[in-house]
Length: 136
View 1 (cartoon, rainbow, N blue to C red):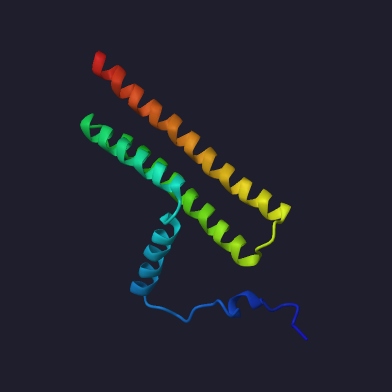
View 2 (cartoon, helix red, strand yellow):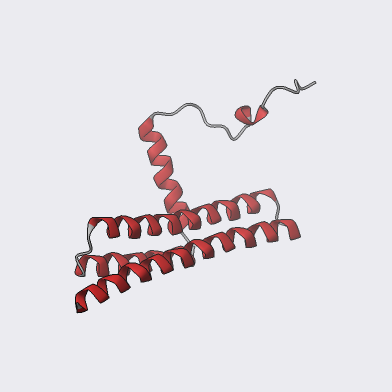
């Protein structure tokens, strides 16, 4: 009989043995590669991010504007990775069609969309300000 006060999540069969920091970082980078593979949305966001970085470099934006842009890029790419992780998890749970899983995946996709729209608004404001300052 289980002790109602215990937390069995830390002893599941998926739980990894304690690892060194270098192995933790290697796993994290491997996770990024797995999250990117076969994800056309991530690739589109990555291409857009490269365009933003190139434009910021050409315009020689100040450090605070770079920080805003890098933060927005990071949020969108992280949202894409969370979405991919949820997709992989749902695929591992069942091969059957399930309305609850479909809704969860739609919500995760919505979160990516919200992050992307917010990033686009921030980016537009940063670049519009730079363009208007160049005219003065």
